[in-house]
Image (cartoon, rainbow, N blue to C red; front, side):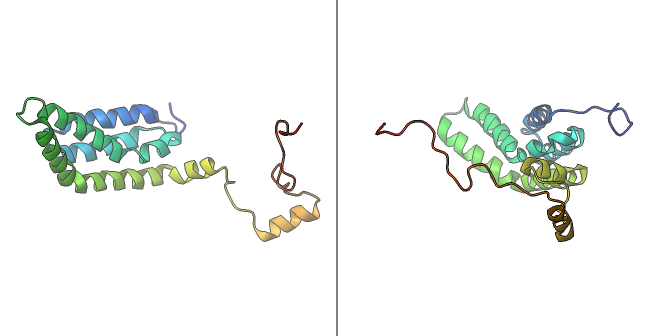
Length: 164
């Protein structure tokens, strides 16, 4: 059972990225674009909400890695390995660009709805809400203060001086 009260499969970020890579790799020789978009949708819907941030930034890298591997395997049996590989990568990346943008945008949009802003706040260490000026004034009157960062006014010197 998940926290929402319904049973379901939840993947970690690593598991979702591996799943996206496998789906992209299997679909790359046949229908690379639709397979990549389907993999993006499956990954963002199955990942745990706290692991959305690592997943959102990886679809372009996964697409590139899958294209690299497929084109490298295709080029192995050719007469000119470098020329075949270069042309294959150019073709795969240029023809896959609209699908790459679509998959990345869908991943970002769905992740945003599923709680990506909360992950970003947690990453920055920011509070859930910014205190209003009235709340800050109440804290000052109550004697609470926000301490300055350590070493802000007096720099610390670590170790021993060279002339000692």
